[in-house]
Amino acid sequence: MELPSEKEIEDVAKAIKAMEFSYLSRFADTINRYHEITLNKEGINRLQWGAMSLLIVRGGSLTPTRLARLMFRSKHSITKVIDSLEKADLVRRSRTQDSRGGWVFARRIARRRLHSACGVT
Image (cartoon, rainbow, N blue to C red; front, side, top):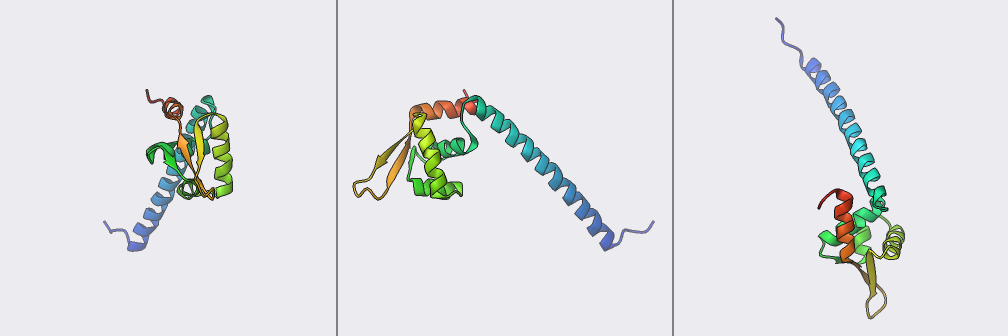
């Protein structure tokens, strides 16, 4: 019995790698879709969920600039997210004295909504 050549081993490894990536990609799509459906039931989208999660995990408050950086989004898009969360009474804003910036604070209800959206009791 002849052992496979190095090239044959590399070819099989590449094929396996491609299959694993395909499976992983499909699995990620399935998880994302489930997450989207679950969040929609709570009336929030993935960006809002991400912002609330970061606010809570980071101690309850962040500047909008820091939140944008952590979410890999523009400040403009984060402003829209914060506006929608503020309208839903899930966060509140507070301006600094120099009024060049401000802070965003998660309200207690945000933690409950987040846990409810994730199925945590």
